[in-house]
Amino acid sequence: MSQDILVQCFVEALGVQAPVVVDSLKYNSIAQWDSVAHMTLIAMLEEKFDLMLDTDDIIDMSSVAKAKEILSKYGVHF
Amino acid sequence: MNNLDFFYNQPSPYSLSKEHKREAIELHLSRLDTHHYQNCKSYQNMTNSFRHGNWLSSNSLLMPVRLFKQQELKSVPQEDVFKVLTSSGTTSQVVSRIILDRGTASNQSKVLVKIMQHYLGLQRLPMLIIDHPSVVKDRTSFSARGAGILGLATFGRDHTYALDDDMTINIERVKSFSEKYSGQPVFIFGFTFMIWQYFFQELKAKNIHLNLSDAVLVHSGGWKKLIDVAVDNTVFKQVAYNTCEIKRVHNFYGMVEQVGSIFVECSHGYLHAPDYADIDIISAETMKVLPYGEKGLIAVSSVLPYSYPGHRLLTEDLGTIYGEDNCACGLKGKYFHVHGRVPKAEVRGCSDTHAVEQKL
Image 1 (cartoon, rainbow over the protein chains, first blue to last red):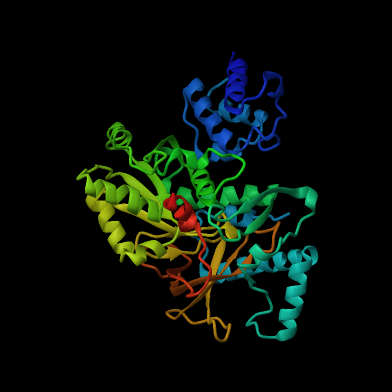
Image 2 (cartoon, rainbow over the protein chains, first blue to last red):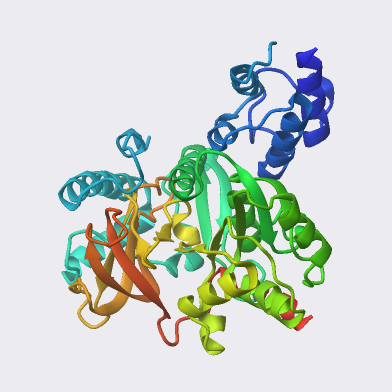
């Protein structure tokens, strides 16, 4: 469930296909995940999971795996 | 590798007293001297000839900022190059090109976060951006203005643009933002000239008064255009209060050659060097370091530049240092004012990124 929402957020914010969104996908490793898309992604994650991320979380969110780890801190289970 | 853990582990970005700072920053900068000397041929050549000429007050080369326009200065292998920052890409002049590897880019973001959190807190605040949304639309080529807005956007949420694409203020949007977050802290960011011209002046002309009394206004980009119309920091702050009731205003001094380690204005109106950076005032005649209180060329150092030799820079700005560790605001570090550009230096900087649009 959370996994599907997470993938959907990446798909919409980055404009990529769902199979691209794997744990090893890293920030800035593909053209679509740049600093602009990153802020769109953050806004989308906050909306869909109904939470508010800190500045440090945004800087730390350097991969899909890391995104899961950070969201877990806020009580989202994967 | 450029390990900054010592600095990251300090309780605040303004905690090192001068003895500790001198030791820590000089150790770090001298490591960077060696790294750049070994990995950047141009830096090595320049250092050798400067040492030979023996006209520097220290053994370390201060890189003149305009050299970043004239050549590509790089201290990492080409395959490690991750991004190239350019300055003021919308003006007709030659732009600076700053070569970044992943490590340097990541440290820039981290240090900017450490410094800004000191003023804004850990939580991201609702953010009003005094610019128009198109400034960040073209993702392949950001102007310095777009890059600045994006960098600072990390500290906000519900990003709201105060201006429309034709640079006119969108009163509805601004009013609904200020009403929605009335009584809550918010973050306002923009470039000094744009805020003055397209926000404050428009509010005044339209006789609109906003209540943004819990806002923190952060701005940058140079005063040149405002000094021409006799607006200084005091006037700027007064108008911020009169039109929007904004009490907390922080200007900052920074440059594309040292992104991240910015110098932010404290509660007493002085720009402050954070632990990650330092400033000296150099005499243009003798190239020697001037004592506090004297006006001269600003030289800045930063522990961040690893992929390009920009850790010790000679700028074309004039400034005065007033002291170190004894500012009334309580923060450690040297505190200073910037007086503007050296006469006849080429026009550069974020504030000029609007020159082209204005002519349209």
